Image (cartoon, rainbow, N blue to C red; front, top):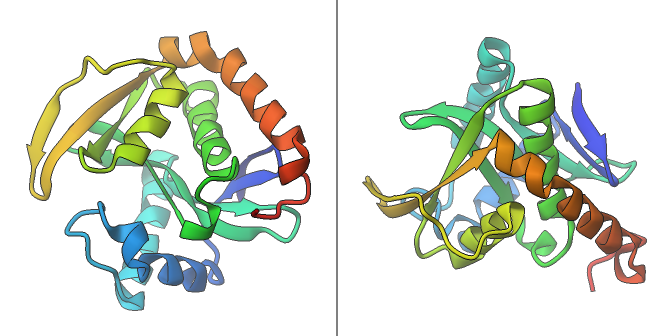
Length: 196
């Protein structure tokens, strides 16, 4: 079931064939470096995680959704939401070959669009390991911020920066972000989805 689609990216519910793609991603030490303990995850753990995502969709109407690219729906990672201790958590993870392309930014933007336009949420948040500078910078780009005013929380796996995404802030910067996306997707470099 597709959740939202635009700019050649689709967020959808998990299908059996996604286990292979997610397992490969979760086995990559670079992808998992700043996630929880930083350890890669075996296939059985991935299957349990996907089952949890499906249960979240059924119970709350939101989930971490599989992110796919193009008509052939190539798995690139996930973006979406999960209920956590500090509220509704906005989480993303993408396989390493897609880093540095527009598609992760677009997938995250689509998830936020769905959260605020369809689910009518007031706010969501991320908890990002303070060592994960690239993820923090991406979140700053979503909000067009120079610095964060939210706090740092000492969690089980070290200090994490909380970043709050409010409905009001998202809508204020939305047009600029969508203009940026259109420019990126329209550029020749990414026109055929190739990674250069």
